[in-house]
Image 1 (cartoon, rainbow, N blue to C red):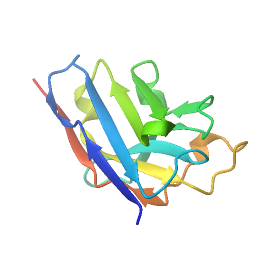
Image 2 (tube, rainbow, N blue to C red):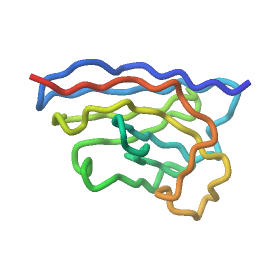
Image 3 (cartoon, one colour):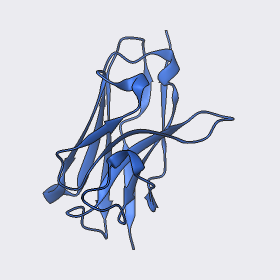
Image 4 (cartoon, rainbow, N blue to C red):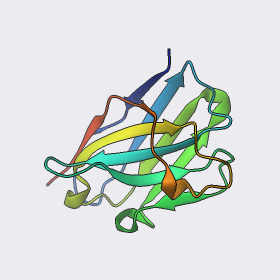
Length: 126
C-alpha cells in the first residue's frame, strides 16, 4: 500500500518560512516525478512545484518562483517544499503527489499525481 504522509504546515507571518515534508512508504521514488500542489476553497488544485525523477529539472508556478524550492531525498523516501518569503496569497492546503507515469524526458510541469498526501494547511497571516 502506497502512503504519503505530510508534515510541516501551520501558521506563519508574512515574510516567514516553512518547510513541508512528504514521507513515502510502499513506493520507490527512484523513477517517479514528484510534486506539490495547492488548493484554496472554490478553486482547482494548482501545480505549485514539481521535479523530475532524476532531480535535475524543476517546474514552479510563476507565483512562487524564487521563493519556493522543491527537493527530494530518494534513499530516505522523502521530498520537501521549502517556502520562503511567504505571503498571504500562499495560504492554501498543500498536497504532495507522485506521478509514476511521467517519463524521464517529459517536463515536470506535466505532472499529474496518481498518489496523494493527505494535505496540510498553510496559513500566512499577520
